Amino acid sequence: MLLAAFQHKFGRDVEAMAQHLVDGVTVGWDELGTDLLDGAPHEVVSALTGGQQWASSTLDHLITPDGSPPARMAVTEETAPDQDVQWGYILRPHGIEVIPVPHAEAGPVIGWDTDPRTAFSNHPGHWSSPVLTPGPFARAVRPLRSAPAAAPAESRPAARR
Image (cartoon, rainbow, N blue to C red; front, side, top):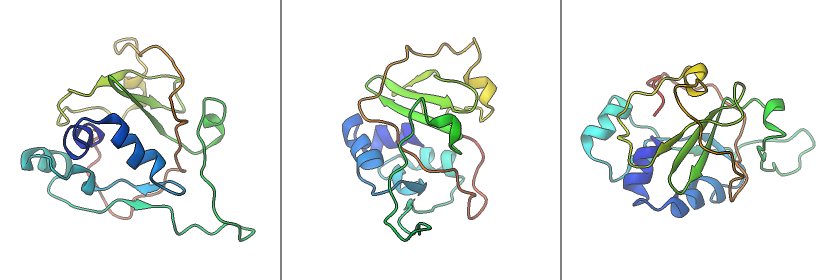
């Protein structure tokens, strides 16, 4: 879905995509929806969603134990192992690095020109295997921010794209 969003909704502008996904939310994302596919060809949207549509939703409804406003959860190399984060995505100028957080410190970089309909495995071992050579590790311009993985409200296609 992120490849299609980059190619269509954000017009191949990684900074615009980062602004929307990283900087444009107060706390984090509960779920990324099919609104990220705006502008994508019907066949791409259908292949990625099976025809389903759902809206992206942010974590604006959180209530903290002490009543203070919720704060962003910054995910870094040091904090990721202690947080309930399953996957990390780093938006790089030449592609998106996909990291199975509990299983690897870095992951392969998938080029932005990759067809979003490509079948990617959601098995973490496939992303950290020697067959896929990870890109060189470098700090992202912005720290990767995420929220704990939430259970989906309804069944969605299982394939990760």
